[in-house]
Amino acid sequence: MSRSIRKTKIFGITSAETEKQDKRLWNRKFRKVCKKLILKNKETPVKVNAVTNVWDGAKDGKKYYLGTTKKDMRK
Image 1 (tube, one colour):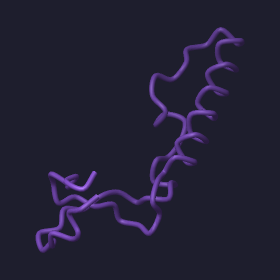
Image 2 (cartoon, one colour; image 1 turned 180 degrees about the horizontal axis):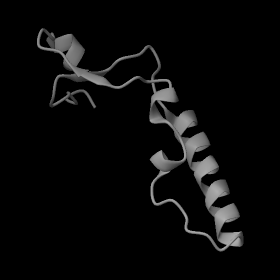
Image 3 (cartoon, helix red, strand yellow; image 1 turned 45 degrees about the vertical axis):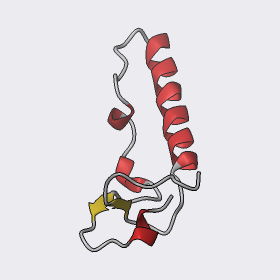
Image 4 (cartoon, helix red, strand yellow; image 1 turned 90 degrees about the horizontal axis):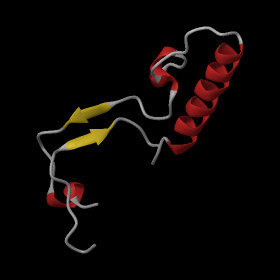
């Protein structure tokens, strides 16, 4: 991975490394709601966003930075 670099100058706005735990919770909640609606013979939501709010996660989005250095572009 010594030659691994970012292709774009887009970075997450946070101090958190990943949203893995948030995604797990969102998908668990989505499956739970779908199971309950299927038992009631109702229509289920198609996307996770219909059940959860993605802005509640550890990361608050991404931003394009113009003044990046070579060190910033390393993975």
